[in-house]
Image (cartoon, rainbow, N blue to C red; front, side, top):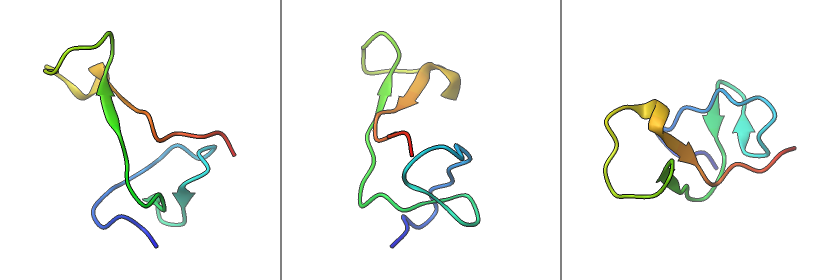
Length: 52
């Protein structure tokens, strides 16, 4: 199963699938340093990441 519309280009992530898809059943994205608002994507992190 892949998450429709979720692109992942992190090749060493356990959930990275063919075609740069994400095969996790759900994802968690947080903001660097906490908080509830980001100004740019570079300020966020995918907490679902697990090294292959």
